[in-house]
Length: 348
Image (cartoon, rainbow, N blue to C red; front, side):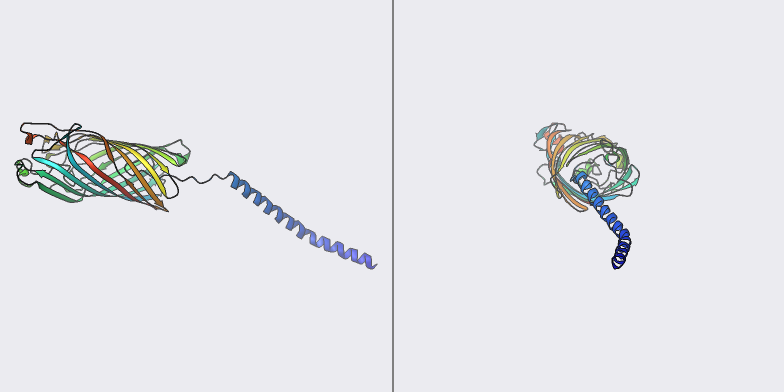
């Protein structure tokens, strides 16, 4: 009887413990399944690929997603100190310009406004310095410095293709306008004011004209690399004091490679073809031409901040100019001698 009672108690204990055992086994099975899924997902999960940020001296074909905002501050130092007729360097023994230094600080803000559409605003601040020789070469050179706000540009861009939506590359078109916000009323000093009362449109802070802009850009990401191509055409409008900046065609192609999480390297080909300016109703035949640069650069990236530096080097130039007798009546185009571009970027 005692054995029977013990057996009954044992059976009751088994019955009471059975649901807990099933529960424990179920939990154990679930844990094993979760571990198995995690292991499989770890095996199937692709390693993160470092990406190269945008190139320093050119645009691209990317449109920001809706709600994303980026901003940057770009600084350019441009020294033009050599005179050219076509690709031939001239000695510059004539009355007129012979040295120019332009420094630009440009603030850019860009935001994704709608699906496949973003807008940007570019606000330039200039410091322009030009040295010129009077007609009497025995006199010392004249120096003009012009500083302040330049012409603000507003652009919109639409994505035709985006890699984030599964397309094979990023392709975008855009349009905008350069507005006449910069001062265009700086006057020449004697003796240069005898010919032209006002400085030419390139020496002013602004041109006084509304200049439409049109662009097309493409970007392809693959692995740690990116390839960018971009073209922009600017139509010079009628500006202040019967002047007009020449139409400009700018084209670029570049390659960037992410070395690691912090550094990128890049190489760009940058071309600018510029028509001659109109100055006081007359075509200035010593302005405009075609220049091509190679720009090596490096980027530093940290979290949502990046800093880039590039050094454009001229590999080809064909500048407008003409010779006259006596030589001081000749006019030649000023070519690039030295240029540095840097950019500090922020993502929000």
